[in-house]
Length: 129
Image 1 (cartoon, rainbow, N blue to C red):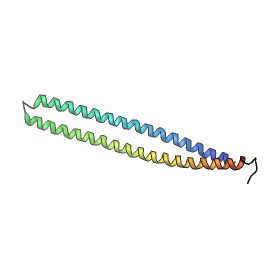
Image 2: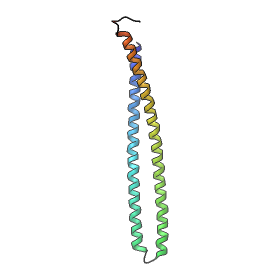
Image 3: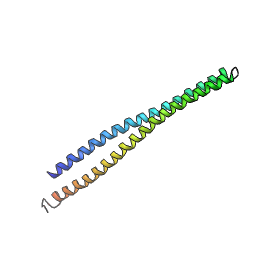
Image 4: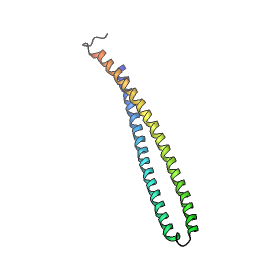
């Protein structure tokens, strides 16, 4: 009876590990998406900066400076939002990895207990000690 209870506990840990690994995969996908959005924002910023330079720099340097300042502020805000999102994802990833490590440690100890019980029950020709 004890062996079947230990096996059920091990199955529960396996299920929990699978759920956590699924969440970690989702987080890693989101982190990749955040990196892509960061690169897209940088490319958009560079394009706008180049456009402003060719359109306004020689004709009206003051307007060019004002536009670049606004563009920089918007870009910094976008990057701050993306960085905040990436930080949240990193924190969430670390939390799930910690849970996964704890569950793996519990699973390991229960596996050792199962092996010990099986050895006690069956190693000596069915004699119980």
